[in-house]
Image (cartoon, rainbow, N blue to C red; front, side, top):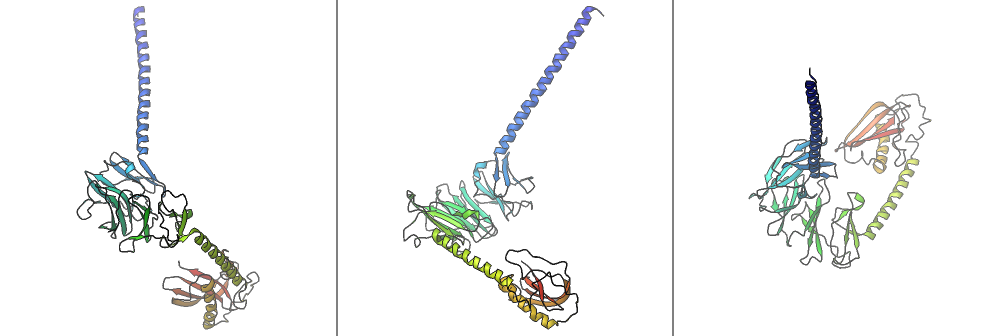
Length: 431
C-alpha cells in the first residue's frame, strides 16, 4: 500500500471518529432537550393539579380531561369535556373531591351550558352527567357557579346569572331535582355561602348577605329541616339591641368540628369585635363570657361526677361484690346459689351499671337470659374512672352469667359466682 493510500485511510478514520463524536454530542443534547421539555410539561401538569388538603386527595386537569386520585393515588378520569375549564375555576366550595364522603362531584362549562358530574364514590366507577342549564333545573347559560354542596339527599347550588342576580337551588333527591329557594332579599355576587361541615349533618352552612351600601351584612343559617332552608340569625338580645354586622362567617372553635365561633361588629369601620359561640351548629348563640362560664360550670360538675364515680367504686358492698381479687381463693365450684337467687343478685349489678357505668341493661330490656359458664373475674365494677379493664385470667370460676339486652342490641352480662353468690365481674356489649 502506498504512502498516499495510507494517508487517505488515516484521514477517513479521523473523519469517522469526529463524526461519531458529533453524533454522540447531538444525541446527548437531544436527550437533555427532551428531558427539559418533559420536565416543563410535567411541571405544567403539576401546576394544574389542585390538592384538597382536608383529605389528602387531589385532582388535576390535563388535555381537557379531569382526573381525580383514588385512595391509592391512581388517577381516575371523569366523564365529560373539561376543555373550557381551568384549575382556578374550582374553589373549595364549588366541588367535592373528598373520596371519603358519599358524593364526589364537579361541574364543567361547555358551549354556554353547565354540567354536573357526580358519583356516589370514586371506587364505584359509576359517574352521572346532568345538564344544569336544562329546562327542569333552569340555570341560565353563562351563569357562574359560586358554591355547591351535595351530601346524601341534600344539595345546594348558589349561582350568579349573567345579569348579576343570585339564586340558590336546593335538592332533597341526591341532586337529581332542584328547586329555587325563595328569599325576601336580593342575592348577588357579593353574597357568600359557606359550608362548615362535611358529613351531611342537619346544618349545612351559613349565607352572608351584604346591605345595598355594603356597610353591614345579615347572616342566615342554611338548615335542611326548615321549609325555606334559610333562617336569619339575630343576636340583638345579646348585643343590647344593637344591630351588629356579620362581616365574617362562623368558624369552628379550635378545629373541634362541634363548637362555632363568630366575630361581629357594629359596622364595617368598627374595630371593636364581639365574639359569640354556638354549641348547636349555630341554632343558638352565647356571648364568649357566657360560654366560658357555662364550660366552667360543666367542668366543675364533671369533676364532681368523677369524684362520686370513684367513691362509689371504692365503697361497693363487699357482701355483694368481689373487691379483693388477690385473695379470692375459692376452690369449690359447687352450685349453692339457685337461678332465681342469681337473678336477684345480678339485679343489684344491673342497677349499679345503669347508674354509673354502661347505662344499659335495665331499661328497655328486650331479652333476658341466664346460663352457667366458666369465667375469669374482672374489675368492671371496682375500676376507677378511666382505668382499663383488668381480667384476672389466673382465676377460673363457674358463674351464672345473667344477660339483659335492649332492642338496640346493647346490654350487660353480670357474673354471679355459683358457690359464693358474689358478683365477680361483668361485661357491656353493643355500641
